[in-house]
Length: 196
Image (tube, rainbow, N blue to C red):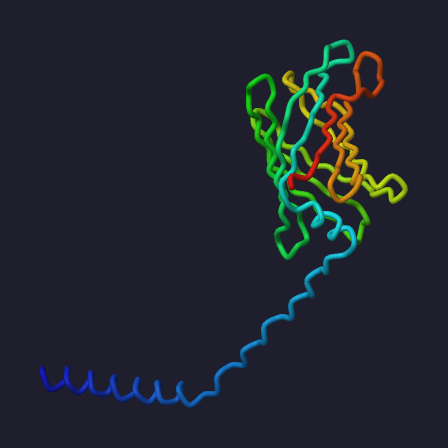
């Protein structure tokens, strides 16, 4: 019995050794070259406009929550830096309102194909928003429209106008559509001044 078992195992080993040699002698299948990556988009004059704002800024803000409400004033801070190959501006914003800090993060870019600025923002205690809009060289500003959900879960039409006044001054204005009058009114005005 041992002899038969050894003969079977030997025969199996020899046949499999031959198979292994045959497989080893076969040519390897060709390895496909990695697909060429599309060239990365290059930063243009609009990305440079965003990059120009890198650094720390102080904002003087005026807020009005309804057309008949008294305005509130606050001081805020803004820190900008370019990320992702200098194609996006990452901003950290801190508003001080009635002794309470509200923090936000926004990402701003420029879509060269669509020729529009894009922005996404999230902040404490609120819903995130995404917006886009064109740049007007005559006013050195972007106008972006978006919708924001209010505390009752309803969407409100909003507009942001961001003006690049000069290398040391920028202006943020946010408007809300009043549901009762169907008129836009300014709810936020922030004059940003570069810290030196």
